[in-house]
Length: 377
View 1 (cartoon, one colour):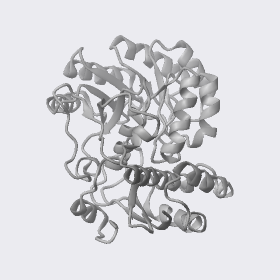
View 2 (view 1 turned 135 degrees about the vertical axis):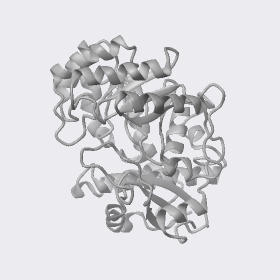
View 3 (view 1 turned 180 degrees about the vertical axis):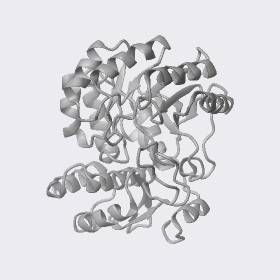
């Protein structure tokens, strides 16, 4: 079974806010779908956390390497693409695009064998996982209302990030966290993401360690992206001295970038993004590396329904990965696949057990968000 063609289609029109200081708009494209089409009529789908223009440019670079390749060998084919494009800049748009291709190849392998990807990764430790509702921070009153609605929707774990946190005052930071804990109660998980990868982030080590103490007082489950994403030494000190777990890693790509962070002990929880890091093949290697260094693997998932499907399959294949990120208020997540997503009475999300990623794209939603009826094979 050979790769005959790879298509890309950007998602437009309802892009949710990202919380960035230079905020994206609804018409901006930051997520692109990938379709890998084989010569035997089988097609796999993936997602890339990168704009359509960059993905299309990367596919032109990659085409001589993937055309005619074996579609049932995702790890080998993806590694070939990495190995022959390092001169294009390891970790940029090319690596992101390879991520979508790799996800789609695993989808093909699962469909060809009739197995869910998690089983092909070595076996399923669980059949369901707890999703945490991921939302942007707001001032206390609107945040409280938002969290109460999400709890009514069935979520039992919540992560709030970016917005005014760390950007106005310590008093506002605490008021936000206090309002959140009051809204969700003591029986739900609460995580805080400072958004340290935002442009010109000013939160330094002293700010982070003081804030970590405040967060611990409200039983926050982890403190994410507290520092600038290149501040390795400060992260190491923060993890050693903070009274709660420290999480990060969403901007890193490929296992080579993660290795020094994991070996230095910079994180309690590492959060690679499958739609950027190199796909399922690369994320699995990073997760293994995390295990060897005593670090918990929880995927970053501010992406699409296909990204969530990949995260769910990965979560089934690792014993300690009992949470997945669920971006709230995004039609690219809620509406993109047939049947959508449903939480059970305990706030858990079933891991699809169908072949491949276990989900089917909704043709009407794809056409609406991409403006094309020709993407789906």
